[in-house]
Amino acid sequence: MSTPVAGAAATNPAVVTGDHSGRQDVASTGADRTPFEVMLNLTQSATRGEKSTNDSQMIRVPARLLECHMTLPLGSSGGLYYVRVQRSVQSEVLKTAQGKATINGGDIWLDVELDLSNLSAGGYLLSYRHAAESWHRVPIVVTNLTK
Image 1 (tube, one colour):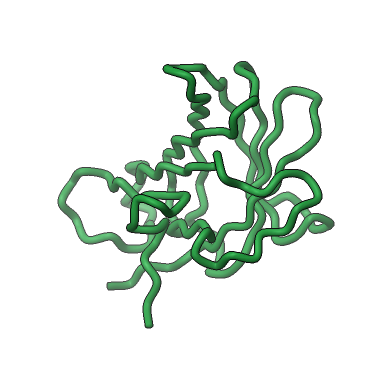
Image 2 (cartoon, one colour):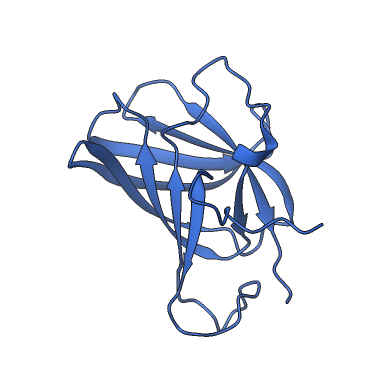
């Protein structure tokens, strides 16, 4: 049974919106550097110390150059945020990004570009934090799309 990338149902925490080119979604190649838009709803993400046990809440993203539009949890601050991707809490940081979160209509939006094109398929941690605050971790699954 295949699982959709980034969740297809409105209740899932992430939705792939695509690059609007009409091309088939495949893993990024050197010639394909157009960012793939992904909306990540982190408003329901586990807080510090909590563990997510609901597989339906797992965020799935393609191994591509991503333009991530993240909705942060209620109570998050606007301003500069740091984002990183790693295999586990204690492993080396594989990808980093930073962006400015803005408050719009009561939602806190953070837009960052993450190049996951050279990551192998599997589980990772997407972590984000505001300036010098503590890291918030969200488990993600990177998938290689071949069809």
